[in-house]
Amino acid sequence: MHVGMVAKSDIDQALDLATELEREGVQITLYLSLPHLIRELETSENPIEKLYELELIPRTIRVRLFDLPRMRDPRSLPAVYRIYQEMLKDGLDVVHVLSGPHELWLAILALLIRGLPVVSTMIVPVQNVGEFPSQRIVWWINKILAMGSKIIIVNGENQVEQAHRLYRLPYERIVHVRLGARRTTMKFRRHQVEEQDGTILFFGRLAAFKGLKYLISAQPAVSQKFPEARFLIVGHDEDMPAYFANVEDMDRFEIHEEYVTGDMAAAFFDRSSLVVLPYLSASTSGVLLMAHCFKKPVVATRVGCLPEYVEDGRTGILVDPQNVEQLAEAIGKMLEDGNRRRAMGQAGYDSVMAREGEIVQKTLAVYNRVTGKS
Image (cartoon, rainbow, N blue to C red; front, side):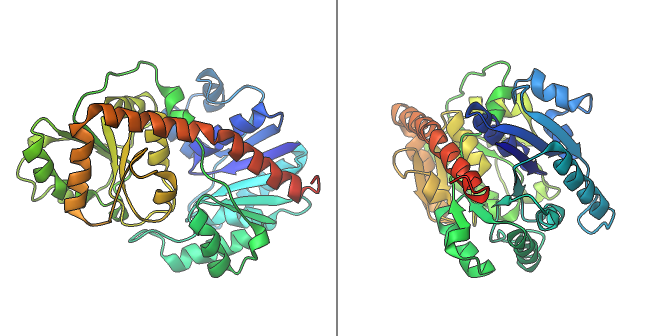
């Protein structure tokens, strides 16, 4: 079977899933966004060869690159059509689109394709709190995606009902496949960094729904009990200074205000004792999967699909969203018992690695179903 996998922003997931499918004998051609790939690799010099050199994918996986203008730019339409024409020349059996909430042109690609069955992963069925674009725009994009796809894959169990209710999809056209290990960041690691006790990591884009302000509010209570605790904030947002406007003791924080990929990202996870996700809403979380891959336990909120991926008390601790007291208490529990914390990190790693086979088999079953091979 020859699968064409398309990704714009979620490059990591495409690389990881393609690699696992290739090991099962599936022929893969990746169609990746050139600007996003350049940002991920931190180089514009021969990015396809760089993927192979870094062993992010095996050389048996072919890569095609595309560059789509902005969402409202009509020049994207002929660009999308060129991707479709390339797919026809490549002789695919099935197309798998990994579509984010603002990726209109990938949804249009799914709708445009004729003569090939399309499977799409709807990464965010419901827009997160305070995010752009609005939920109404996300609804239309996802509706177009659903219209062009034989099967919609969702990564959270609760998203099955969301996709059914919001997009009037029959249950037989929705398949729940959990996210797998984010191995790509691990592959970028060139030198393993020693863990620094008491380092609390918040990682990723500082969107309002990520709840950073609640972690900042929890800092005084954590620092009072654990004076050596250090809050490592790694993210990018033009409003970063506003988050820390009322912080009295900035010495407790180490801030890296930048988009981080590659070996540097791996170093931040290596250094941390635990990873905190104080989210107000969530679909799924690549940061959570990265934490598990680096054997780091998590403190996360009971929102979206996070409880599906965090075994409370085994791979992490779950707290209520916006509850600063619970958040500080959970962080304290992690810091006070290093053996338990490391055991949780190992359990998270074991859990995410154990389900890789299941993920591949479920995905293959979807491909076989849409191509009539099952």
